[in-house]
Image (cartoon, rainbow, N blue to C red; front, side):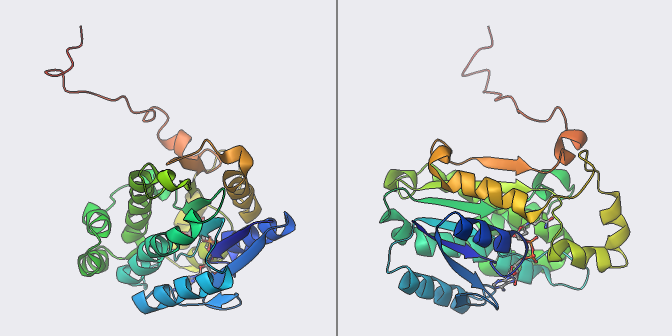
Length: 271
Ligand code: NAD
Protein backbone atom coordinates (compact mmCIF):
# COMPACT_ATOMS: atom_id res chain seq x y z
CA UNK A 1 0.00 0.00 0.00
CA UNK A 2 1.19 3.51 -0.77
CA UNK A 3 0.09 6.90 0.47
CA UNK A 4 -1.18 9.40 -2.09
CA UNK A 5 -2.39 12.97 -1.55
CA UNK A 6 -5.12 14.21 -3.90
CA UNK A 7 -6.18 17.85 -4.03
CA UNK A 8 -9.71 18.69 -5.11
CA UNK A 9 -10.78 15.35 -3.65
CA UNK A 10 -14.35 16.41 -2.79
CA UNK A 11 -15.65 16.54 -6.36
CA UNK A 12 -15.24 15.51 -9.97
CA UNK A 13 -11.87 14.21 -11.18
CA UNK A 14 -10.28 14.52 -7.73
CA UNK A 15 -13.05 12.55 -6.06
CA UNK A 16 -13.01 9.85 -8.74
CA UNK A 17 -9.22 9.64 -8.34
CA UNK A 18 -9.42 9.36 -4.56
CA UNK A 19 -12.06 6.63 -4.89
CA UNK A 20 -10.09 4.73 -7.55
CA UNK A 21 -6.84 4.86 -5.57
CA UNK A 22 -8.61 3.77 -2.37
CA UNK A 23 -10.27 0.88 -4.25
CA UNK A 24 -6.81 -0.13 -5.52
CA UNK A 25 -5.64 -0.38 -1.90
CA UNK A 26 -3.83 2.91 -1.48
CA UNK A 27 -4.12 5.21 1.50
CA UNK A 28 -5.51 8.52 0.26
CA UNK A 29 -5.14 11.93 1.88
CA UNK A 30 -7.81 14.14 0.35
CA UNK A 31 -7.34 17.92 0.30
CA UNK A 32 -10.23 20.29 -0.41
CA UNK A 33 -12.28 23.20 0.87
CA UNK A 34 -14.72 20.77 2.51
CA UNK A 35 -15.37 17.04 2.92
CA UNK A 36 -11.67 16.17 2.98
CA UNK A 37 -9.01 14.75 5.30
CA UNK A 38 -7.18 18.06 5.00
CA UNK A 39 -9.53 21.02 4.77
CA UNK A 40 -7.64 23.95 3.28
CA UNK A 41 -8.18 26.92 1.00
CA UNK A 42 -5.63 26.66 -1.80
CA UNK A 43 -6.53 30.16 -2.99
CA UNK A 44 -4.17 31.77 -0.45
CA UNK A 45 -0.48 31.32 0.42
CA UNK A 46 -1.50 30.71 4.03
CA UNK A 47 -4.00 28.04 2.99
CA UNK A 48 -1.43 26.35 0.78
CA UNK A 49 1.17 26.34 3.57
CA UNK A 50 -1.43 24.86 5.93
CA UNK A 51 -2.34 22.19 3.37
CA UNK A 52 1.32 21.18 2.97
CA UNK A 53 1.82 21.05 6.75
CA UNK A 54 -1.32 18.97 7.30
CA UNK A 55 -0.48 16.53 4.50
CA UNK A 56 3.04 16.13 5.89
CA UNK A 57 1.57 15.37 9.30
CA UNK A 58 -0.95 12.91 7.83
CA UNK A 59 1.71 10.99 5.86
CA UNK A 60 4.39 11.22 8.58
CA UNK A 61 6.71 12.94 6.10
CA UNK A 62 6.72 10.21 3.44
CA UNK A 63 4.46 10.52 0.41
CA UNK A 64 4.35 8.06 -2.49
CA UNK A 65 2.07 10.04 -4.78
CA UNK A 66 0.60 13.50 -5.27
CA UNK A 67 -2.22 14.41 -7.64
CA UNK A 68 -3.18 18.08 -7.98
CA UNK A 69 -6.79 18.25 -9.16
CA UNK A 70 -8.12 21.29 -7.28
CA UNK A 71 -9.17 23.92 -9.75
CA UNK A 72 -11.76 26.46 -10.82
CA UNK A 73 -13.16 27.01 -14.29
CA UNK A 74 -13.44 30.32 -16.04
CA UNK A 75 -16.86 31.97 -15.81
CA UNK A 76 -17.86 35.60 -16.50
CA UNK A 77 -18.28 36.71 -12.87
CA UNK A 78 -15.15 35.05 -11.45
CA UNK A 79 -11.96 37.06 -11.05
CA UNK A 80 -9.00 35.88 -13.09
CA UNK A 81 -6.78 36.30 -10.04
CA UNK A 82 -8.74 33.65 -8.13
CA UNK A 83 -8.22 31.18 -10.98
CA UNK A 84 -4.49 31.98 -10.96
CA UNK A 85 -4.28 31.41 -7.21
CA UNK A 86 -6.12 28.08 -7.13
CA UNK A 87 -5.15 26.57 -10.46
CA UNK A 88 -1.52 27.61 -10.79
CA UNK A 89 -0.18 28.46 -7.33
CA UNK A 90 -2.45 25.86 -5.74
CA UNK A 91 -0.67 23.33 -7.95
CA UNK A 92 2.98 24.38 -7.92
CA UNK A 93 3.10 25.38 -4.25
CA UNK A 94 1.78 21.92 -3.31
CA UNK A 95 4.25 20.22 -5.69
CA UNK A 96 7.12 22.27 -4.26
CA UNK A 97 6.02 21.91 -0.65
CA UNK A 98 5.47 18.16 -0.80
CA UNK A 99 8.48 17.31 -3.02
CA UNK A 100 10.74 16.50 -0.04
CA UNK A 101 8.14 14.03 1.26
CA UNK A 102 7.89 12.44 -2.19
CA UNK A 103 11.69 12.15 -2.32
CA UNK A 104 11.56 9.92 0.80
CA UNK A 105 9.41 7.32 -0.99
CA UNK A 106 10.83 4.29 -2.82
CA UNK A 107 8.85 4.90 -6.04
CA UNK A 108 7.31 8.36 -5.95
CA UNK A 109 5.24 10.00 -8.67
CA UNK A 110 3.22 13.17 -9.09
CA UNK A 111 0.53 14.11 -11.59
CA UNK A 112 -0.65 17.66 -12.21
CA UNK A 113 -3.98 18.21 -13.93
CA UNK A 114 -3.80 20.73 -16.76
CA UNK A 115 -6.35 20.96 -19.62
CA UNK A 116 -6.71 20.67 -23.38
CA UNK A 117 -7.77 24.32 -23.32
CA UNK A 118 -4.00 24.92 -23.46
CA UNK A 119 -4.03 24.05 -27.16
CA UNK A 120 -7.74 24.09 -28.07
CA UNK A 121 -8.69 27.55 -26.75
CA UNK A 122 -7.34 30.44 -28.85
CA UNK A 123 -6.08 33.76 -27.51
CA UNK A 124 -4.30 32.71 -24.35
CA UNK A 125 -2.92 35.75 -22.47
CA UNK A 126 0.77 34.84 -22.39
CA UNK A 127 1.55 37.61 -19.89
CA UNK A 128 -0.35 35.51 -17.32
CA UNK A 129 1.69 32.44 -18.28
CA UNK A 130 4.99 34.32 -18.07
CA UNK A 131 4.18 35.95 -14.73
CA UNK A 132 3.11 32.61 -13.25
CA UNK A 133 6.30 30.90 -14.37
CA UNK A 134 8.36 33.82 -13.02
CA UNK A 135 6.67 33.23 -9.67
CA UNK A 136 5.45 36.84 -9.74
CA UNK A 137 2.13 36.38 -7.99
CA UNK A 138 1.08 40.01 -8.04
CA UNK A 139 1.82 40.40 -11.76
CA UNK A 140 0.05 37.13 -12.53
CA UNK A 141 -3.00 38.20 -10.51
CA UNK A 142 -3.12 41.62 -12.19
CA UNK A 143 -2.72 40.22 -15.71
CA UNK A 144 -5.37 37.57 -15.04
CA UNK A 145 -7.83 40.14 -13.70
CA UNK A 146 -7.32 42.16 -16.88
CA UNK A 147 -7.83 39.09 -19.06
CA UNK A 148 -10.77 37.74 -17.06
CA UNK A 149 -11.08 34.18 -15.77
CA UNK A 150 -12.30 32.66 -19.06
CA UNK A 151 -9.05 33.62 -20.82
CA UNK A 152 -6.91 33.23 -17.70
CA UNK A 153 -7.97 29.60 -17.25
CA UNK A 154 -5.98 28.14 -20.18
CA UNK A 155 -3.09 30.45 -19.23
CA UNK A 156 -2.90 28.84 -15.78
CA UNK A 157 -2.96 25.39 -17.37
CA UNK A 158 -0.29 26.31 -19.94
CA UNK A 159 1.89 27.52 -17.09
CA UNK A 160 1.31 24.23 -15.24
CA UNK A 161 2.37 22.21 -18.32
CA UNK A 162 5.52 24.27 -18.74
CA UNK A 163 6.33 24.11 -15.02
CA UNK A 164 5.97 20.34 -15.11
CA UNK A 165 8.13 19.94 -18.21
CA UNK A 166 10.80 22.33 -16.87
CA UNK A 167 11.03 20.65 -13.48
CA UNK A 168 10.36 16.97 -14.20
CA UNK A 169 13.74 16.38 -15.81
CA UNK A 170 15.75 18.18 -13.16
CA UNK A 171 17.77 16.91 -10.22
CA UNK A 172 15.22 17.71 -7.48
CA UNK A 173 12.57 15.69 -9.31
CA UNK A 174 13.75 12.84 -11.52
CA UNK A 175 17.13 13.06 -9.81
CA UNK A 176 15.34 12.19 -6.57
CA UNK A 177 13.46 9.39 -8.31
CA UNK A 178 10.20 11.35 -8.55
CA UNK A 179 8.34 11.01 -11.84
CA UNK A 180 6.41 14.17 -12.55
CA UNK A 181 3.87 14.36 -15.39
CA UNK A 182 0.80 16.31 -16.47
CA UNK A 183 -2.57 15.21 -17.81
CA UNK A 184 -4.62 17.50 -20.05
CA UNK A 185 -8.27 16.41 -20.06
CA UNK A 186 -10.85 17.67 -22.50
CA UNK A 187 -14.45 18.27 -21.50
CA UNK A 188 -15.25 16.07 -18.49
CA UNK A 189 -18.74 16.04 -17.00
CA UNK A 190 -18.16 17.47 -13.52
CA UNK A 191 -19.39 20.34 -11.36
CA UNK A 192 -16.89 22.61 -13.13
CA UNK A 193 -18.55 22.02 -16.50
CA UNK A 194 -22.05 22.07 -14.98
CA UNK A 195 -21.31 25.59 -13.71
CA UNK A 196 -20.29 26.68 -17.20
CA UNK A 197 -23.32 25.00 -18.81
CA UNK A 198 -25.56 26.91 -16.38
CA UNK A 199 -24.10 30.25 -17.45
CA UNK A 200 -26.26 32.08 -20.03
CA UNK A 201 -23.28 33.12 -22.15
CA UNK A 202 -21.08 30.02 -21.82
CA UNK A 203 -23.74 27.31 -21.80
CA UNK A 204 -24.51 27.41 -25.54
CA UNK A 205 -20.78 27.52 -26.35
CA UNK A 206 -20.08 24.44 -24.21
CA UNK A 207 -22.80 22.66 -26.18
CA UNK A 208 -20.92 23.43 -29.41
CA UNK A 209 -17.60 22.01 -28.15
CA UNK A 210 -16.64 19.31 -30.69
CA UNK A 211 -15.93 15.89 -29.18
CA UNK A 212 -15.43 13.22 -31.85
CA UNK A 213 -16.23 10.31 -29.51
CA UNK A 214 -19.69 11.85 -29.14
CA UNK A 215 -19.86 12.60 -25.41
CA UNK A 216 -18.08 14.34 -22.59
CA UNK A 217 -15.54 12.38 -20.58
CA UNK A 218 -16.24 10.72 -17.24
CA UNK A 219 -14.14 11.58 -14.18
CA UNK A 220 -13.40 7.85 -13.77
CA UNK A 221 -11.70 7.83 -17.17
CA UNK A 222 -9.21 10.45 -16.00
CA UNK A 223 -8.79 8.65 -12.68
CA UNK A 224 -7.81 5.48 -14.55
CA UNK A 225 -5.03 7.31 -16.40
CA UNK A 226 -3.84 8.91 -13.16
CA UNK A 227 -3.71 5.50 -11.46
CA UNK A 228 -1.67 4.16 -14.37
CA UNK A 229 0.79 7.06 -14.27
CA UNK A 230 1.28 6.69 -10.52
CA UNK A 231 1.77 2.94 -10.73
CA UNK A 232 4.60 0.60 -11.75
CA UNK A 233 3.55 0.49 -15.42
CA UNK A 234 3.96 4.26 -15.69
CA UNK A 235 7.60 4.37 -14.61
CA UNK A 236 8.97 5.47 -18.01
CA UNK A 237 6.82 8.61 -18.06
CA UNK A 238 8.75 11.75 -17.08
CA UNK A 239 7.77 15.28 -18.05
CA UNK A 240 4.98 14.10 -20.32
CA UNK A 241 1.74 15.97 -20.91
CA UNK A 242 -0.90 13.36 -21.71
CA UNK A 243 -3.89 14.63 -23.67
CA UNK A 244 -7.15 12.74 -23.01
CA UNK A 245 -10.02 14.56 -24.68
CA UNK A 246 -12.18 12.31 -26.86
CA UNK A 247 -10.48 13.62 -29.99
CA UNK A 248 -11.24 17.35 -29.66
CA UNK A 249 -7.72 18.59 -30.22
CA UNK A 250 -6.96 16.08 -32.98
CA UNK A 251 -10.08 17.32 -34.76
CA UNK A 252 -9.17 21.00 -34.37
CA UNK A 253 -5.42 20.80 -34.97
CA UNK A 254 -4.61 17.52 -36.72
CA UNK A 255 -1.24 18.57 -38.17
CA UNK A 256 0.15 20.78 -35.40
CA UNK A 257 1.83 17.97 -33.47
CA UNK A 258 4.44 16.63 -33.48
CA UNK A 259 6.01 20.06 -34.02
CA UNK A 260 9.30 19.64 -35.91
CA UNK A 261 12.38 20.90 -34.13
CA UNK A 262 13.64 23.65 -36.42
CA UNK A 263 17.28 24.14 -35.49
CA UNK A 264 19.15 27.28 -36.54
CA UNK A 265 20.44 26.46 -40.09
CA UNK A 266 23.55 28.60 -39.53
CA UNK A 267 24.54 26.18 -36.76
CA UNK A 268 23.06 22.98 -38.22
CA UNK A 269 23.14 23.19 -42.08
CA UNK A 270 20.24 21.30 -43.68
CA UNK A 271 22.38 19.50 -46.28
P1 NAD B 1 -14.84 20.03 -9.81
O1 NAD B 1 -15.43 21.37 -9.63
O2 NAD B 1 -15.74 18.86 -9.84
O3 NAD B 1 -13.73 19.78 -8.69
C1 NAD B 1 -12.79 20.76 -8.34
C2 NAD B 1 -12.48 20.64 -6.86
O4 NAD B 1 -11.51 21.65 -6.54
C3 NAD B 1 -13.70 20.84 -5.95
O5 NAD B 1 -13.82 19.79 -5.02
C4 NAD B 1 -13.39 22.16 -5.27
O6 NAD B 1 -13.92 22.27 -3.95
C5 NAD B 1 -11.86 22.17 -5.27
N1 NAD B 1 -11.38 23.53 -5.08
C6 NAD B 1 -11.79 24.64 -5.76
N2 NAD B 1 -11.23 25.71 -5.19
C7 NAD B 1 -10.48 25.30 -4.15
C8 NAD B 1 -9.69 25.96 -3.18
N3 NAD B 1 -9.60 27.30 -3.13
N4 NAD B 1 -9.06 25.21 -2.25
C9 NAD B 1 -9.18 23.86 -2.25
N5 NAD B 1 -9.92 23.18 -3.15
C10 NAD B 1 -10.57 23.90 -4.07
O7 NAD B 1 -14.00 20.13 -11.16
P2 NAD B 1 -13.21 19.04 -12.01
O8 NAD B 1 -13.71 19.16 -13.38
O9 NAD B 1 -13.16 17.73 -11.33
O10 NAD B 1 -11.77 19.72 -12.01
C11 NAD B 1 -10.61 19.05 -11.52
C12 NAD B 1 -9.42 19.57 -12.28
O11 NAD B 1 -9.53 19.16 -13.65
C13 NAD B 1 -9.34 21.10 -12.31
O12 NAD B 1 -7.98 21.49 -12.16
C14 NAD B 1 -9.83 21.46 -13.69
O13 NAD B 1 -9.29 22.67 -14.14
C15 NAD B 1 -9.31 20.29 -14.47
N6 NAD B 1 -9.98 20.08 -15.75
C16 NAD B 1 -11.32 19.86 -15.80
C17 NAD B 1 -11.93 19.67 -17.02
C18 NAD B 1 -13.40 19.43 -17.16
O14 NAD B 1 -13.91 19.49 -18.29
N7 NAD B 1 -14.11 19.12 -16.08
C19 NAD B 1 -11.16 19.70 -18.19
C20 NAD B 1 -9.80 19.92 -18.10
C21 NAD B 1 -9.22 20.10 -16.87
